[in-house]
Image: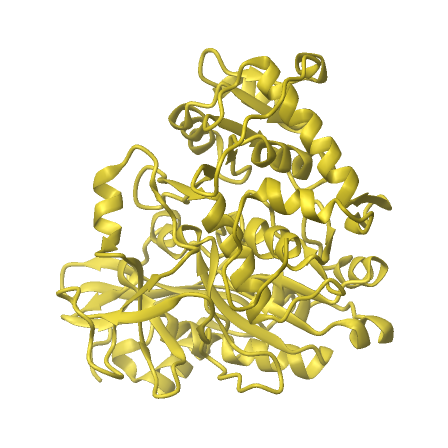
Length: 506
């Protein structure tokens, strides 16, 4: 299979893995234990397991649950499910027992690959009839029937912060397209080695790094979890040329006392930020300290990760924008779901080969998510005269105070301008007088002298008193999802309200 920057990948993940296996080139290195896996060995082991699943009587298109952290066993389970034509069903280990149990029930998975650390939990929440796979169960091998690029490949559940999780279904075509959009935006080649520190049960880790390497013919360094203390040493020992992380990781690296080696700085082409908006001050400070350009991007589970990216240097990177469309089309929708006039704010929508097929067994939610063949992202923004998208907030996260829509990101940006702020998120709380009041939560550097009063005054000076938080809560850590994205909508429920003197003047 040939990586064509102008045309989305054809065929299936099985086809592409077979093509990569024609060489013995390294596919994945594991710097935590020094293990390596070649493309040929990855294909051979995945094929053997897939043949065992066929021999066990699992039908193609059925869900095969994967309950693993990053590691050799987890990535082999993923590729085995994809190679055999099964629906790889990634179970989010950070979602908690209720959400994990829901996914196992809803997916209808008859079998599961389960890491040893998760065995007891899965036994307590698994539906009746779910079999935990062991090597002995896969000894009867049968030939894998053919399947095409439209077959179900991936089932991944959204976080479900406002209700039950929804199961996003991707085909082999859209899954490969997710790796392709990354590869063309970042000019990946067989010489590149990405750093997979985000979990592969999240769309960023799976599509950006894993599928990006498969499509481009490059390789990966993979660790079980992110560690600020070990990040640069692991990147150095694995020979990393790029990495994909989230803003909270960038912030934690910025506030750590570790540094990349001179060799690592020379080798690293770029770092990639996604999953939520990156504060301007954080990006600028990171680049100044480490000398590694950060490429801000944007993606969704429903679009197999990336839809937007800033160009690589020396192309124009617009700080504060996740960039322009690569491999798909993006437009702004007005409130009536028609195209918005140029430069006007509205809902960001996307269409392209990387868009999901559906939400599993949820036709109502699927219908609401699409406007014709355009997928509605739920994000608000506008497109400038150069085609760069600027995200102003989430429809569900808008704070409505006194009838005025306030994007919490505006407040986040002001808070992040203070060097001692590691994490920050503004949020709304119901209020009888104004509909909602504004509050914020922050995590600060140990030993910081920042005060609530000083931060509120700063927001008032920069945004006006009407948009300044009424109170700011200091937490050790803000709640985050599996990718490290701060879960803003959980803050009001987990923080006790305080009686404050509300300000209403502009």
